[in-house]
Image (cartoon, rainbow, N blue to C red; front, side):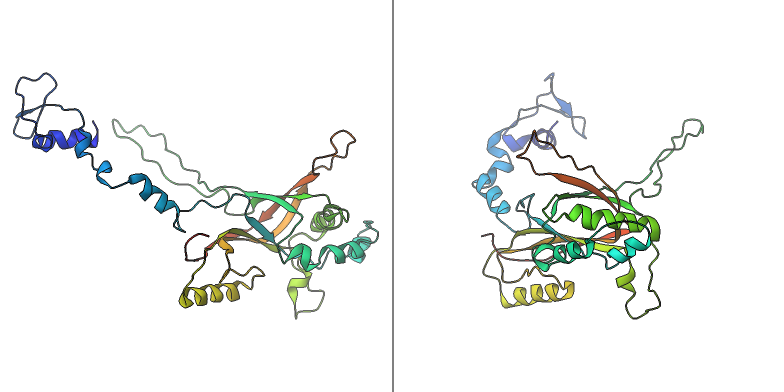
Length: 298
């Protein structure tokens, strides 16, 4: 029985219907009076009472909060660990000749900061779930109740990034040495006696994913000031104030390091496709931040 049918049963006068005592399709109200079942009358339908409902729907989608963002509108930023150095690899009997030259070229802000890591082609991370279950108990006719267990993806979750093979290979000169050094150094930060800046001796790095959107125009000074404050707090290279393009959501994965790299497949057959490699990163936790950007869509 739908909403309109319920209205007809509770108050049969909504559609001008009178009770039919002997109607085979009638039902009884609280006073045991037989009320007829009547089909929905669209003239009294609450939904169609709105003027031009399709315009209301389109108007809702045109608002910033309900608009549909582009799936491919994102950037990823992270720093290349300072420990990825040719001498560190050579000390471990690992040979990566001229790796410092390649690293310096790839660490350019044009490739890693201004528009994010341009070598990254896609990213995805695991969802959330807990180990909920219902205990099996024989307590006569009573039923057991479910209880929530622990989280599976809260600690050392799985973040998958894919990178394309470039002329100066980001895969072979950054990702491979990173995995190799992690296998030797583990996740312990090292300062080599220099306590002024421990982070430069740490192989774990935060990976920031900016989910972008069109911000609109005509922002008020208050909105522009709020977005300016957000931008300065995050120290981002991607401004989101007074700009038709900005971040709508920021996801920061903390203490990331790669644990495996996929296989590079070179062939003479399919020469038009982009060669990419999937890399799995571990992380301790993640932070999700909503970026309030107001204004109509462009």
